[in-house]
Image (cartoon, rainbow, N blue to C red; front, top):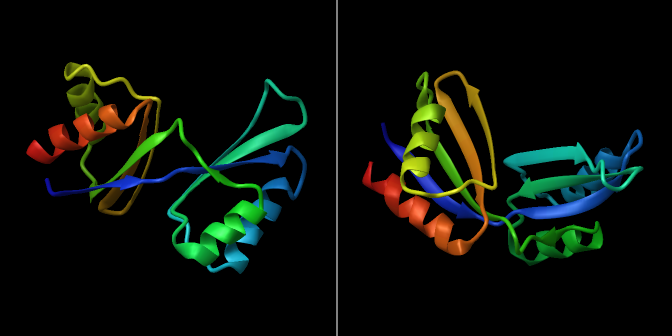
Length: 140
């Protein structure tokens, strides 16, 4: 199955854990014309009353400026890749098994399917792990 594999920068921001906290962050990006492909938001249980939102991509000077003004920073600890492919039952298991067998540990994974397409966002602890994963997956 054909896979489109690319590196992605992950941007993160703290937000208030209250109605509108996430909307405020996303609206700032929307006003700058940012076309997000991935959004993950959650509470931060270790810090009462706050949450965190992760987004990708942020591209170009005006989008970067707007993201920074809204409190987003490009993460230095998440090294991400994006895999776009066809939707095949069990593909997530195959993908994670290949990475595990190569000794590559995942920091995080999110995936979604729509009809016959699937997109995976995988985060690693280092650039070396992300690069190793890309080389491995491109061989398959």
